Image (cartoon, rainbow, N blue to C red; front, side, top):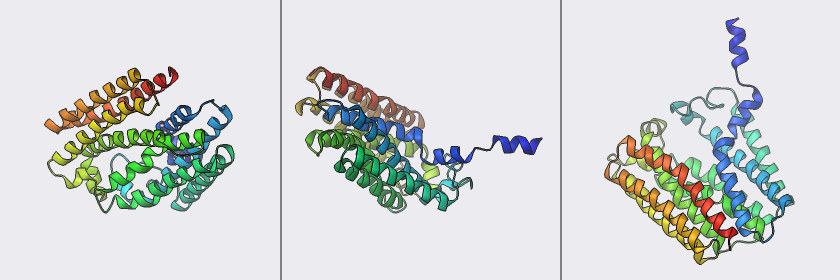
Length: 295
């Protein structure tokens, strides 16, 4: 009965493959694709919107799967990742690679056919820079985090390109907002789990910065820049001045958490900054989207 119970409790193959695609983590990225599309579209085309969301989700899932296959040895050494499907043997590396390839190709096809080629090109750049540039670079240099912030910030640009058929300053401002948000988000997380990252051989800034001073100051720098970029949404016509100001105010609250982290780099302040990052980006998007609707 014990063996039967253990067998019944084992995740199904479908559940393991789904976990490989990191659907919960990618949900925010796909949401920003939709926001980019909404802000760029003069008239919403629901069919195109559905295609760009599905295509982006598939490409994001493929990138996550490629990443987990490539980092399976490192994941096995980290407490928070050792139960992922590949390190546990639930999914073989070959199966993971094939699954990632199928998702990625399918997503790009959906984007080309359902939206436009430029959105597919941006998605392809996102995939390549994440899976084959950022992923191996993490084991070589702390600068990898800046490189990794590029694919992380491209999802709203995918949506903008799908809506407008091109790339423009408004789309790049959306890129900048997500880019600057990511650095405090990642640095605070890495500081909390720096022992895990060190054990796995990842040369992230938190590992190479013994007292955390540079980690905290860089977090503060990017948090302040997030405030500036949020306010600029009114200048480029993405949102009304009132709601762009509200977005900047939310960013200022986040910057205050970064100041507190800079003054005290203990786990409580680091965790507060990380949790604040999970709240502030949705608040900024809500403000900008609401302001856009009032224009």
